[in-house]
Length: 536
Image 1 (cartoon, rainbow, N blue to C red):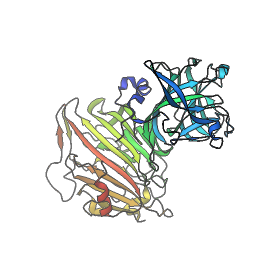
Image 2 (image 1 turned 30 degrees about the horizontal axis):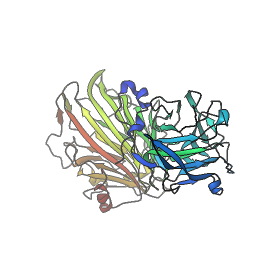
Image 3 (image 1 turned 30 degrees about the vertical axis):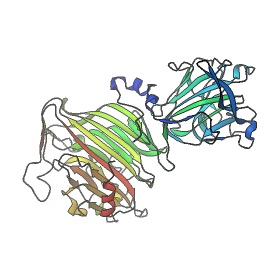
Image 4 (image 1 turned 90 degrees about the horizontal axis):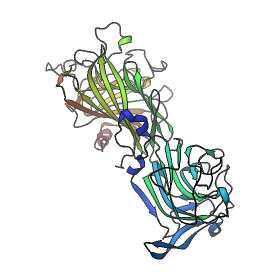
């Protein structure tokens, strides 16, 4: 598994920590380039001009008093390439594509001392195509068009620099330059010779993957000892990225909406909407959005995807208090903080802390680690781990069917809509027969409408190390699928043994589920095969 881009963060310093420049230090080394084997790794904007613009040259290189001939990449500045918008003319792009955060380090030598204030060399990253990328113009003197961090986004270059030393101190010698871009926070830092203090700072999240490059606007110079840290993007591997918002976090796959983590939806956090592989929502809109075709305005506490329980120290955290009439004690799961938002290779992870509160009294605490991702076959997934913590006293998780890790599917997918929706569990039981039964997974597959008949499925897998695995399932033909390790007395075959679990103060209890959203109708054997590697 690729190394994480961001480690655990102290939430008292959330904003500062998410902007920390230490992020890129943890990126894996992707490649080093000393140009001893030519330019096979690179392609240039000036390919037709050939060696008139780019070539491998030999220069003297001295190390500790010893001099030797060294190969470098040389750009002459004689480019005839015309970019689609006002932007640099001469770029050598690395053929590899980087996903997520990136660090680029290189030795540079500008060989045009008469160029004046616009004397420059450039480093590029986030390259999507000829009209979409970032670059830093290491110009001798800052003005609106030089010595800035720029974005080219379907229009002429635009400076996005927030902090600037206003000069790049070029001499005739070689210099060391470095770019760091944390795509989770948007922080961009540019270093020149001094690798501790950035000379330029910017912040932008437009491009979260792309190619890196070397070049110049219209000058000439040498490049050597290029080091790239990051993760190489697989040819068909989708990239999941996200950002914190006022309402929680927005998650996208290859730049397109996937879902949102809503930190305050009624009485608890939820994940909604969830967009499936066909580009349409696979969970119910109501009550967070409009009541759509095939939906019923029942169970207002069924909100797309969520975790809670209906009996915690005799307090019901399952129902929506304001929507279910008077109750003795109201239970709320209150978001406290985001502890982490990080890139895990092509995937995205968030960690949150939440308090379970009733009558202003804290009953329980949880930490949720949620990883969002997608696979090359178009399927998408949400890996959800919740760590319950009895931090203030003993906690009894009562025996009730109303729990715990739950999804409410889109209206047309449910069994009782009779459009082809089906419940299927790992024991081979279907529809109503799957309710209350132990299973390692439960799948609900169906169409997304009367005209949209292509089936889409949501499978929930219970981790083998979960408490009381295999879980019992509160799976209903009206669209609810919920893994519940605490329910016993309500579920068939009517077992009278107590399903409640007691956590003594200081105890923790971890549950992990994975929601897999797939196109097409799969049989039991196919999902069993998927279950063998789903948590790898």
